[in-house]
Length: 170
Image (spheres, rainbow, N blue to C red):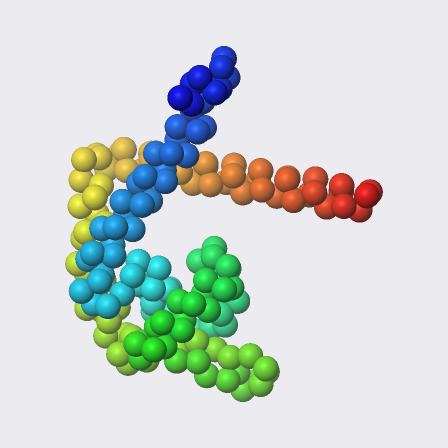
């Protein structure tokens, strides 16, 4: 069907987008099944892992805005994830001593334990998903996906810049 719509144009971009979405959906399903036993989803686990990494670097608390930028998701998404993790007792919000209008996110002891207990098996699961690829193929795939992400980011920036020019002229 895509080839019929594309005519003589190359439809590879559409085909790759479809394949990447299918892979992402399958990752989500596998993660949710695996992490669901611990009461977590893939996105919640990723946020906990990020907070754990920040602690290892000496950052005992970070802002939701920082998490949003690091995880490349909206502030609303981070807020929703944090609400769920806070209800589970895995994170806590602490008012920022320097700016009483904002707060910092901290792992609770229960959150640290959850990361330590789930990380080995979850990392092994994600690695098993790559088992059909050789180490060289894994590296090549990671490199290609990084380049694709850079290209998409550049395109988004260029589109935003064009949109700003049109708005300022109009």
